[in-house]
Image (tube, rainbow, N blue to C red; front, side, top):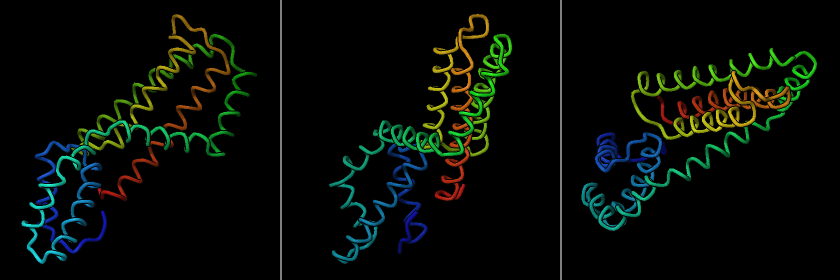
Length: 204
């Protein structure tokens, strides 16, 4: 969060107000708190009034527009896709993807590829469970940046299903399996980067 001259009690007041207004995601709320705190500070100085009066005046004219940000989940989803794309096309990821496809092309017979595809589905399930436990049982808070990262994993799941089929109806090949593993590897890297970034930003 940005440096502010408001007291901790005043920041908590803004935070609780936004929670009551159903801004449930911590990262979205933190962004709003920065915006509100800056605007309220400016109003306190320009109008020479106390915090609560400045906060009330700001909210009278800006509450509706401010809370619209809470409903712009698609914007945050786009940011998650863009962030994943940047990770996806990192040189080390691309080299790893090409390596996977080459190895599978030389050593992957149909039965072997079928088993790998089966393992991918269990891998996706395992990652989903780990993310859920981490978010809901360890953090005990909701972060939109992490939940949107999970949407990327769901996209990979449907990519796998569409291009490879399931175990009993496998129709993929070394290229489609290689691309799927490449996407899954890039997703794991992206998730780690996202968690580290959000921990630095929100201190949790």
